[in-house]
Length: 337
Image (cartoon, rainbow, N blue to C red; front, top):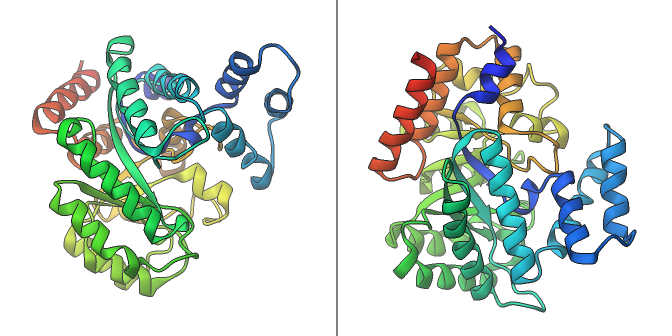
């Protein structure tokens, strides 16, 4: 069997991907050309440099973020970017996607307009790319402070009144070294009370005390879990909190030394619920297929392992029961035909 081809054609479930970080170099170049024409602007120069070279430092990779932000300041730019991301995931045979983004105010639109544009575009994508089901996890960026978080939660709560079929949860992300998790307890409790699931970036850095508080507070999924200690892992196991593992992201950010040493191995071998995700596939030049291929080769996964990983991703997704059953049938059909 050609395992790489098998994985690329496999129906996949992506549960941890950020909108701006999902814009590939090729897509950024396409968007920059649409926005500025064929003129050789700074954005196009940076993108072409990425296309011509394969290896870049982390700082160089992060130069893609300002380009992505600059190209999504207008409704049209945001719409084009989101449609491109959904297209790229669909072409990678991702059949279910939970996408994260922080509602932003720009010189061209308010936070409310940003969120409305994202939701309208997801509905448009449903007809353009019918093979992928897309849900939204609005992000609270803890590096922006508590007042901004309250504003985001207020906007999301209002949108939930008519868009609860698309808005399925809240993501807590941003630099964990800047603020304390304690500040966000009330906001996240409000999210729970509004029937929003919690997908929290947790144990991204070595801070076992905060990780303990977050796990005790409770969450529906843990993002990364890279520095989770054995004591905190016991709490996660007791509460059966799934962990979203992002192999390439962790390696390129230097939070793990190698794929072989990635915590995915111990989690999977101990039967703890774990899912493979991309995090920022555009920034780190990966795809969900690439992540599965890396995992398969590194940890000697069988096709049965790949099937179980895929079905578990459906189980811990925030899709409704009907959607979950449909996606599971699609996955099972692929593996058993």
